Amino acid sequence: MPIYEYRCNSCDNLFDRLQNHDDDEPDCPVCGRAVMRIFSPIGLRFKGTGFHATDYGKRGPKNRVSARKR
Image 1 (cartoon, rainbow, N blue to C red):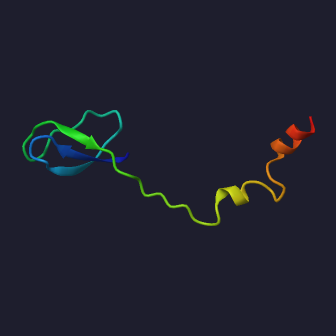
Image 2 (cartoon, rainbow, N blue to C red):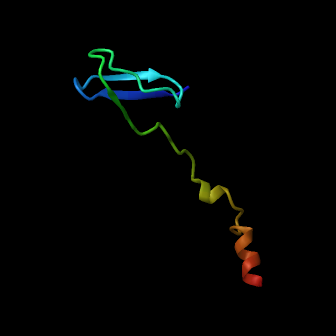
């Protein structure tokens, strides 16, 4: 289950909640009013020389070579 971050519309309280994506949004634990989900960037790191250099062979993608011969 993912962890979602919420902000209260009334008191600006920030809190996290572990829940399913189809669960109802929780109420603010401080004031009990409606909250809004905050979308924040995920932790994603690309390592290495890159997919473009390693996905294809040294001659490039095979589809391009066969398309040129037609």
